[in-house]
Image (cartoon, rainbow, N blue to C red):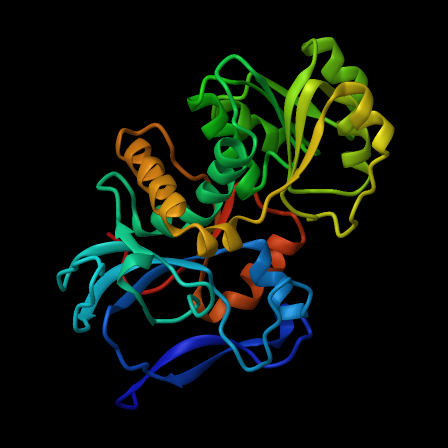
Length: 334
């Protein structure tokens, strides 16, 4: 091993997962208010895939290393700054990286790291924060979800959808989980969904109306044709949360439907919200970690890959073969 370098999965062209390969890259210097984390696991998120194709809101020029979140061990602590979170060498942490997580190590701001819950493995820690924060910001900050309301979760078998199902139940909502595969929906049902609907096997609108009187909140990370059906289910003053477009198609909504129901379409951009409102972000992550420590929230991991298999991990996610989360494991697991 060359001193001063480490292995990382690097995107060399905007051609999708096939352009991602393991390379040796230089170690970063740890500056004031920063820590170095030896990565034990990295979560794989849909934006990581979009970045490799140049299709995400954030545009990166190759070469770059994907990876928005990791879990690992603190190995170096830089000089402290006012407001920096204190860390000790050897502390197990969850860290939000933005990019760069598909690597043996990463340098992050001290406040971008959080204690790994005792009940979590490194893999679970790496699969928790991004999906959890997205669900929290959408349901709590944007929708103001109240106990007793009904939430319809599209893409419920994906990582963000699964997190939304768990959190909505913890907030006292009635949850209808929507997906396209009965086997995958069974896992979401076990996570606490009150009802599960396979939209490929039955008409979505008719099926949901047979289950609930109306939907107060739609959580939609999918978009496409499913969105134009789901918006018809909103109750009076319902809120439609636009979380993403995993289908690849951006839907359009007719304004008269919003007028008749007094309903709202609300954009959710969790990553940007965390940057603009850091106190809200820190509070939300703290709440999520507390619930995780109590055993109330836990990610579901269906696929694990090594660092050398990062391209396969991204492809598996993009091909919708996943239930919950995909994780890249690096180094020893506890």
